[in-house]
Each structure stands twice: as C-alpha cells, then as structure tokens.
Image 1 (cartoon, rainbow over the protein chains, first blue to last red):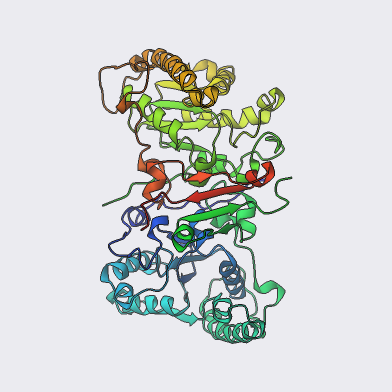
Image 2: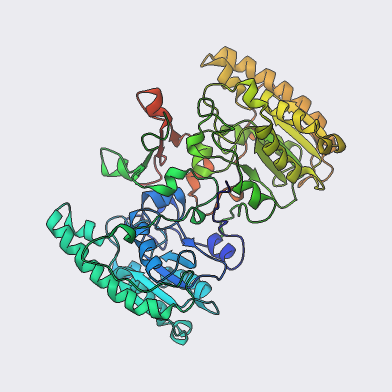
Amino acid sequence: MPRPFDPGYFEEPFLSLVREYPGEDVYPPGQFRVEWGPIFHRGRLDGSARVLVVGQDPAQHETIVRRVLVGEAGRRLQGFLAKVGVSASYVIVNTFLYSVFGSVKAATRRDPRLVGYRNRWLDALLIGKRVEGVLALGHAADEAWQMWKATPAGAALDVAYAGVTHPTQPESSSKGDRTKLAQATKKMLKSWNVGLQTLAPAVQHPDTPRPLVLYGDTWAPDDRLPVPEADFPAGLPAWMHEQDGWAKRVGKTLLAKRRNITITVPKGTVQ
Amino acid sequence: MPRPFDPGYFEEPFLSLVREYPGEDVYPPGQFRVEWGPIFHRGRLDGSARVLVVGQDPAQHETIVRRVLVGEAGRRLQGFLAKVGVSASYVIVNTFLYSVFGSVKAATRRDPRLVGYRNRWLDALLIGKRVEGVLALGHAADEAWQMWKATPAGAALDVAYAGVTHPTQPESSSKGDRTKLAQATKKMLKSWNVGLQTLAPAVQHPDTPRPLVLYGDTWAPDDRLPVPEADFPAGLPAWMHEQDGWAKRVGKTLLAKRRNITITVPKGTVQ
C-alpha cells in the first residue's frame, strides 16, 4: 500500500524562503518558542491550491511533524475545506513562524521584518497563482491578511476573503466550562457559516463540487475530518497522522516545561 | 544568514521508494520499533555522492530528525569521510529501516522483501552514478553489502569497498568499563585505518583533496566532526544539529520506554 507524503521544499521560491527565515532578532524568545525552530506550512506548494488558509502559530504536535495545523484545529479546518469542496487543493501558512509563548507585543507583530518575510510567502502563494479564496483563522491571522492586502501586490489581487474565529477558540476561551464551551462553539460555527457563504461561491474549481451544507449549533460527525497523510513528511507513523495528544510539554517549572516535548505512542499501537 | 537544509525526497526513484516502504509484515514489531516509522537516508540523493555509506539502524535522535546517523556515530563518520577528502559528496542508508528492538532473527535479516527493498535503494544510489567507494559500518551492514553484491547489478559494479567496525561498537561492547573502552576504541580505529587505506586511493574526486592521515590509538580532536546542517530537514533548531543527548527513551517499564521519546532542549538554549 503506497503511503503518500508531502515532498516539502525543493523548488524556488520555497527553497530560498526556507533557507532565509527570521530568527531571534525578529521573533524575541520572550514572546516565541524560537528554540524549537520555525514551522512553515502545510499543503500544496505546487500552485494547485484553490484556497489559502492563514493560521496562527504552531504548537507541540506541529513542532514534531514540522507542518502547521496538524492537530484538532487542523481537523476542524479540513471539515471546513470539505464543505467548500476542497479536499487537497489548499495551502496553509501561519501568522507566526514560531509557537507563541505568552503573548505577542504589538511592536513585534508589526515588525517590518516579520511582516515582510510573511508577505514573501503570501506573494509566492498568491501572485500569478490559482487561489480563489482566502481564509484567516483568528484575529492575528486577519491582521496578517490585512497587512498583505496593504501591499501593492495585495491591493492588486482580487480574491474572496473570510476571516473567521480560530478553530480552537471555544476551548481556549471557555477554560473547561462546558456551558461556555457550547456557547462559544455555537458562536464560532456562526462565524464559520458566514465564512462558508463567502468562500463556497468563490471557489469555482473545487476538488469535489458539492452543495453547501452549513454548520449547526454544534459539531456534526463530518465536521471534523482527518488531516490527509499526504500533508505529512515522509515516513511518519500512522498515529502521528490520525490523532493528537501524543506530544505534551512536561515539566515542573515553566522553564523545564518550555524545554520539553514528551512524545508517547498511543496505547494499543505497541503491545 | 542562510540556513542550508536537505530538501529530501522529491524526485524518482526516491519519491516511489519513500512511498512504498515495507511495514510490520517485513519488519516484525518483536524485532523492530516499527511504531516510530522508517528512516531512510542522510546526504546527497542528487547523484553527486562519491562515497556510499551503509549504516545499521536508527535510534531516537534519528527518529525525531528523520535522517540516519545524526548522533555520535554520525560525527565519527564525518571525521572518517573528511580523511578521504569528502565533506559533502556522500550518501548514507541503513541496513534496517527501523530501529532494532532486541535482536534481529536470521530469517528476518534474509527476508527477500527486506533485502529487495534495500537493494532498490542501493541500485538507485549506485547504478550509473558516480560513487567511487563504499563503506559499511558493522557486521549487519557488511552483510547488506554482500547481499547487494550477489545481485547481477551488484556483481557488475566495480567499486572499492571497506567494511569496518561500527562507530559506537567500543561503547556498546565495553559497557562502561574504561579500560575495555580504550582497547575497543584502539581496535576499531585500526579497522578504520584499513578502511581508509582502501577508500582514500579509490576516491578520485574528493571535495577537498588532502594527504591521508591515519587514526592513532585513540580519538584525536579532528576525528569527530559536526554533521552538516545541510543534511537536516528544513527549520530544525541548531541544537538538534550540533549535539545529541537531547532525545531519550524514558519509562518505568520496557513497554512504557518503548512508547516514549522525551526531547529536552539543552541547558542554556532557553534562559
């Protein structure tokens, strides 16, 4: 059985982009986990993408896999993309190359070097390409998009755009309160429905044309879909594709936790 | 400052090889850590390799980095390659795709599917290519080489070959005994000197021609060299290139340990 994988960065301009990423001078270690290295993208770099997604920042699973949005937020995103008929023709970049540690200062967010590097990626993925819709996940991603739209190249490109609530905002805002989680999920899915109504008609060349089915007040079974194996680097085991929760930051102090990622193969994989 | 990286598997025959690797039916989980996935190679896949190295099996650092021989054994190998003038023009594959767990049964080692897949890699790296010398590290690697040489393609290729002691055999055989370690190191470096005397004259197109300097009875400062950053996938942090000891298998039971890899950023990297 062949196992598809993502060949990654082997052509310009991506070869250069991945060689020339900004480090600690642009992403201060007080605000970002720069010590784990940058994580660049997920999805198609070959010009076949019809939807561009701007996410926020990578976490521990993304750090091990070296691709963005591979966990729960990624599965929710796959469900959204499927609703606009897109199962493979997407590409995802994040607002930030590194995992946010604490919060990001406005001066950092607006640093022309940070913005400029991200804009080089957006230029590479959008100018002269086939993208028909852009989706931003969360406020920071929306800001990233607006910053690119403020460039001459951004202003010149006519493309549908939806900025929606981040896929795991309900969990992060409700902090374990089930009632709040249900309310936040309902609110988020409303925001996603607005996004769907913008992007579904704009995506003229979906992978699989289908009638638009909006979200309900909570998750339906098909609203969360697997992240395709073809989005992962070569040779990663199935449990890294199929679930998350296998990578945790463990430690007794904040520094110990920051220095650690503990990977545990899910129960039942090894006997 | 640009950060070089290895673009990996993006051209045939490597695209297909990396899609079609054998799994548990060929590599039994009782003998291999198949749950962590296969690790394929390190070094040049573009036909520029002058030396082909056959290693043994990957361990935990290789599992995270997804390249072979990136730890101490790899640094010792880089020192050997430098002595034959090769700083970049090499490619490394292992005897086994997966980390050995316990020991490997003869029937597994000789399984035509296991051998056949490995021979496809050796065919891809050797037939019609520019390799001038082959180095095998350890007994299993020597056997792998002999198995390829027994194929029609292997028999037809005239290439210098040296099978030497595995670079960390002194540590594994001496089990903490310093006297035994010194003796085993001396013995290994003798074996490496024999290998150097075979390969140095055979490598007619080194990256940096230099007079052959043999090993002494123990390690000299330049005998261990860094694994080049250009051999690692995109975006990995510097501490993953520059040292090892950052990945450990932790757990109270054999199974817990088998299911775990704990990564710790080296002290001083984060303040």
